[in-house]
View 1 (cartoon, rainbow, N blue to C red):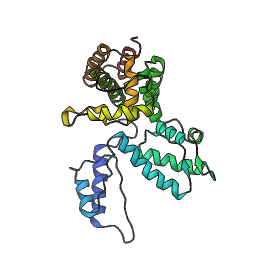
View 2 (cartoon, rainbow, N blue to C red):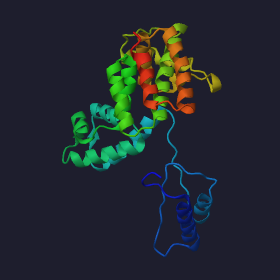
View 3 (cartoon, rainbow, N blue to C red):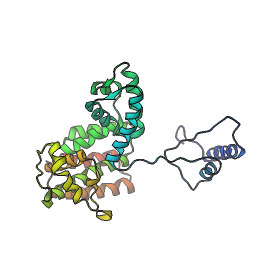
View 4 (cartoon, rainbow, N blue to C red):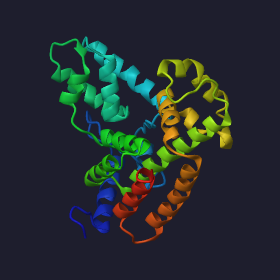
Amino acid sequence: MSRGAVPAKEGTEETDRLERVLTGGMPEGNCLILTAENVDRRKKLFKTVSAVGRVLSFSKVKGEARQRHAVQEMADGLLARTGKRLSTGAWAALGRKTGFELRESLGAIETLITYTGEKTQIEAEDVEAAIGRTKEETVFELTGALDERKLTTALQSLKALLDQGEPPLMIFAMIVREIRLLFQAKLLIASGRLGTFQPGIDYGLFQKSVYPAVRKIAGEGEDAIALASQHPFVVYQALKNAGRFSPAELAGYMERLARTDLALKTTAQDPRRLLERLLIAVCGNR
């Protein structure tokens, strides 16, 4: 048994004890708060909590643009109460480090408020100094290296994520997402329906003249194009980076992803080696 594991019998006894405490009622003036990232609503404990207390669900915001907006709204309120604000560069640096995940972002802002003392404006250098290297930052390094076909950086980022304890299947899912976005971007470019798009287009012009065309041909339901639901800058980067790959290469990578997925889930092959070979195939084939 691994260190820190709880025997099944002991875990059941602890759950039963908690259920008895809950059904017996809390002492007057006391309030018990339980938090969990995931719960099984079929379990007796969840039903007991629902019956004697109150269950609040804070679902993850779907869609990168909506997620960023939600973070910014809550962060603005937090900053306003302390008389501070984040510069444009600081917001960008925060996003690179937290991926605009709500909990991580608000925690980072609280750290920045304390770190900056009497300063009213938080700058990018404050973010770099106060917020350490995060998993999200390493993820961005990996996907960025993949987009730019920088093999050494991609392998270093993979190692860092695995060393941080990130599950191989989660890392694989990130790689799959990035290659799918590149493939969809390539198909959109080939469709000839993006108007004035050129790889060197300025981001401001892209937002005004190209992004509306992407949204227009996005589709709905099963026909929806996942790329079109991303933040405009993600779409912009995918369309620019797709030029580094040929249609045949990206189609081949999609097939390789399917084989790697099968190997990760049904064989005893080393996940690290499988992911390394995948990155070598994508970034080293130039």
